[in-house]
Image (tube, rainbow, N blue to C red; front, side, top):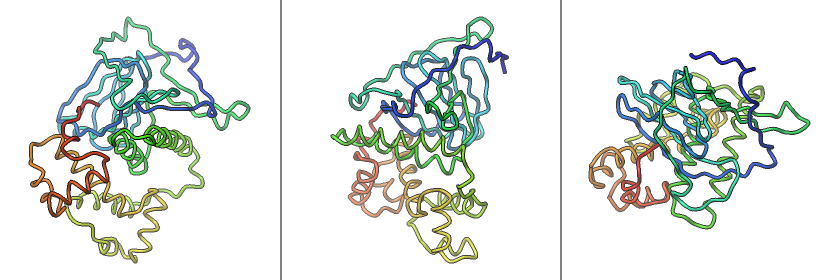
Amino acid sequence: MCGHSPADLPLPKTIAWDDLQPVVWYANRMQCPPGFVFGPRVIDEHQFILVADGRGSAWIQGERYDAVPGSLFYYGPETVHRFEADRERPFLLYGLHFSWTGEYAGTGAGISIRETSFDPAADAKRDNRMVVESPGRPEDDLTIGDVRELPAERFEPLFARIAECYGMEDRGFKASLLRGLLLELIASIKQGERREGRQPISPLVAGIAERLARRARERYDRRWLGEWSAYHPDYIARQFRAQLGVAPYDYFMARKLQLAKDLLAHTELPLLAIAAELEAGSIHNFTKWFKQRAGVPPGKFRGDSRFI
C-alpha cells in the first residue's frame, strides 16, 4: 500500500444525521466474469460497492485493498477507483450510486462515469472520508472511508432490496422508498459498530443460509430447516431471522430472484427455459412473480444496462 500520513490529508467532509436526505441514482447487482476489470475511473456522485461473493482487488486513489465477501468500498466525486475480479472466483458485486442530499430526478438520471488514469507517485491523494456526525454526541458519529468489513449475510439483503426497488417503474413513492432504504443501510452500518445487543451469526445459521442459496433453483421446502439441523424448523426460523434480519423463506426467494436476474442478464436463454430452470411453473407464472419481486417485467430487465 502507498503510505500517506493522516497529517498530510485535509479534514474529512461532514454531514449531520439530521441533514441526511440521500438520493439513490442507480443500484444494481452484477455477477462479474473472470478477470473482469472496471476503471481507473471517476464519478460525479458517491458510490458504495459491496462484495457479496468472490474476491479480487480494489484500488482507491492508488491504495490497494483485498476485496473479499463483506468488503464495503466507498468513494466520492473525482476519487479515482479501479476493481479487478479474481479469475478463479470472480466478484458478485452490488453497486449503489447516490448523493448524501438532493432530489430524485428519475431512473437513469444523475449518473456520470469517466475513465481516467492515476499515478500514486505523482498525483495528490484526496481525503475520501465522509463523517456523518451528531453534534455534541461524538459516540454517534459514523466515519465512512475507503473500505470496511461487514457481515455479507446481513448486508447483502439490504443492498438487494435497494437494487430491486431501483428496478421498479417510476412511481410517486419510489423516491421516498429508495431514500428510506438507503437511510436504513447507513444506520445499519453505524449499528454494526455496536454489536453488544446483536446476536452473532452462528455457524449453523450461516450454513443454512449457504444451503438455501445453493438450492435456489428448486421450490422452497420448509422441512429443509429441520433436515439440516437437529432442531425444529420453527426454532431455526426464529434464529435465522434474529441473526440475519430476514426470514428463511424471504432469504431463499431473494436468492432465487438474484439467480433469475443472472440468467436474464448473462445468458440468452428464453423466458420459458428460465422458468423451467427455476421451477417457476409456466412462463406466465414466472413473469408475474418476477415483476412482483423486481418491479419490472423480465424482458425489460434483460434490456437494462449492465454497468456497475
